[in-house]
Amino acid sequence: MSVLVYVEHAAGVVDEPSLQALTLARGLAGGDALQAVCVRVGATQSPADALAGHGVETLHAAAGEAFAAHAPCAIAEAIVELSRRLSASAVVGPGTERGNEVLAHVAGLLDLPLAANCVAAASSDGGTNVTRVRWGGSLLEVARVHAPTALLTVQPHAVPIETTSSGAPAVETFTPTLSDAALALRVAERLGAATGGISLADAKVVVSGGRGAGSAEGFAIVEELAGLLGAAVGCSRAVTMAGWRPHTDQVGQTGTKIAPDLYIACGISGATQHMAGCKGAKRILAVNSDREAPILASADYAVIGDMHEIVPALSVAIRAARSS
Image (tube, rainbow, N blue to C red; front, side, top):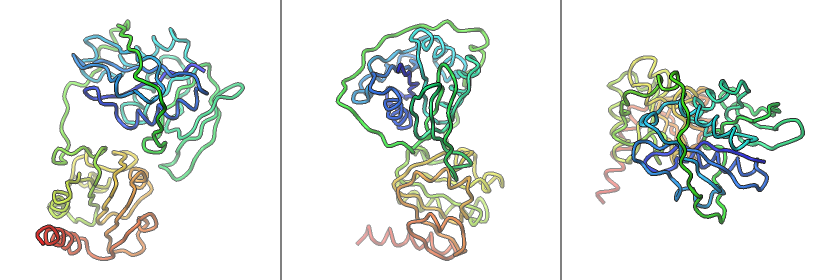
């Protein structure tokens, strides 16, 4: 089975969701070598070396001025052109915000269905069987995709990355033919997240605050603890709705999906949408005054009490431990 995988990278470094997509795609390919596609951003080299051990035979790097910034329609047209040339039976991408956006455009161009947030996939007679996350992670749906080319995205942090003995892929550069409409849509500016330079999606430790913070000023203690731990600062949807923190800090189904080693949730009740964003965390510590809060059912550790008393106490204890 010929499978093409869309790979996202920054300065040649492939992100984890793309590597997870490659793992799922290898199972779908049934032992056949994978084809991968990425875009060159300016003079950035293609991430061929980073794909060693992931079963990729050839990395196709789309080149052109259109890719100097993120251009989802242009990337989609490049993928469609390449998938037709390779007669791909499936196109798989990471289930990130940008990955889902690009694959949705691919689906529109091919007039085919897209199965998003998959955690398993296998070819079968008459289609492709998929298992995917639905309803904010509260259930798994088993379905069959009926299409000549299966289009899938992989739920981030739900498929463990597995490597093979394969070496770095060969690199073939191509310049796709792009429409004027595709060239009209591109990212013009990027605003950095208010996380002290630490990416929320990649952080090993995340400290989040919820409605229990009480105000924007209430996040001072969250930021203090995060600073001591070298962590990113996150928040719940209720906080962004109140205007206390920017949307870039939101953890959840409609925010950023995270997979840190430790997630410290302070004053967060744990709505289904929020838990969908942090379910990839290896350990969850919940600080909440409500011992019936839903998040406690998923927490590995819990401290029952007012976050305005407990979080500063944690910071004091960390400082004391480091000075002893």
